[in-house]
Length: 136
Image (cartoon, rainbow, N blue to C red):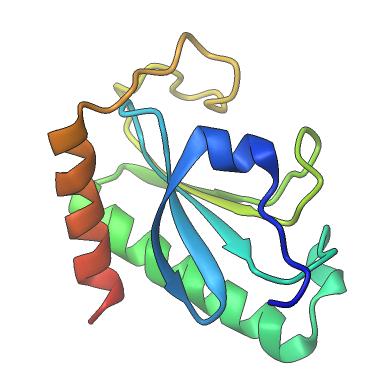
């Protein structure tokens, strides 16, 4: 983790849930979606291929754990998993539970409407659910 600094935009738009296998699992600050952002704590990583093979595999495996957990917790119709990096270059993976009646369906969620901040208790509850399935 030496030299790792979380991008300011990711820090502002998310809150940490927990660290798993040197990856910061973060909850996006938009209560309309069950939306996680996974950030490997590796300095300079911008692309999957910037990671060592073992780190890549751990990030992939964690992405799948998060997708499985969110799919069940949110009773999702579809899971979206993406590492775009067009706005924030630091490597991060979005894991988003989608519903056919959500604000953006069937389009991508980016740029659709205004995000809705969590009420503190709602964020705590969602974080507890996420920690629960990640600690299994």
